[in-house]
Length: 114
Length: 213
Image 1 (cartoon, rainbow over the protein chains, first blue to last red):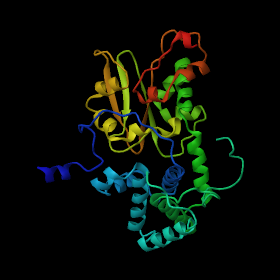
Image 2 (image 1 turned 90 degrees about the horizontal axis):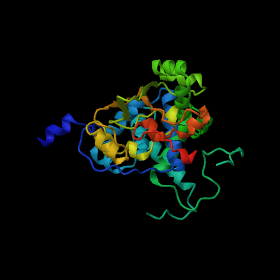
Image 3 (image 1 turned 90 degrees about the vertical axis):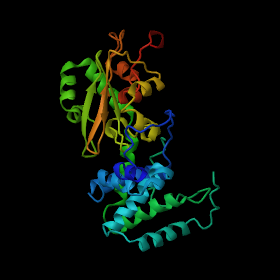
Image 4 (image 1 turned 45 degrees about the vertical axis):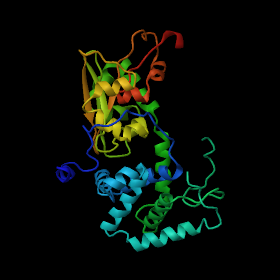
């Protein structure tokens, strides 16, 4: 039964599920989250990744990542995966670029984990 | 908020940072810069879109609602086609979405949700609140809307039908709340001040308290 339910309902398909009380949380987007949102819109305008591809990209991260990553964390990881699938970027290129970006902050202390 | 007139762009590390950017922050920068290097779009497009996002707030939706309350012809055009109705008021749609405006009446109360994700009428309301994107609201709005509304302090009489509309990537909804009683003397701008984001999602009703006027 458990395995059957995995097939019937993908991670995003939660309408009708039981769930707890609604906590009326809101937050002002962090700078990188706002950039990520703008990136999503620009990817859509240029027909590189549309809204439905993005949603499916998030869903295909699987239940554990969908459950544990924050909203925009899911988006950026989904974008990277979709760009790999479309052959626009490779994982190696992204890893190299991420090291380069991290290198710009080499003289800055590590973020404290909250 | 207001010191946006200096002309730097936000594509590189700010001059002073007190901690290293996190993993996903770095990933966003890396993806964006790689795509810009490949000339798939320009850095200016990201910057411009951030400005567009910052310019969209529920005040736009409130303006649409107040116009619909005061101009019956506009209201019928708006209910016919939400997108072109909003465009009449100068609200541009920066995406390919269609907008359906749902009118609350004494017999019907509307509520909007996106069960699959977070689709929302962003051109007219800005970005959705977190609770709209989280599981409890998405899961429960479609099967126990009255209980959900109670959690927002909204009590809808049992004889009033509650309609829940589930948004998609291309079809978005906006609730046209009922104009509260006792507001006949208010002008359009004063009416718009009464209209909140949550009323246009449908989780609350628009209230008017005379002493607040």
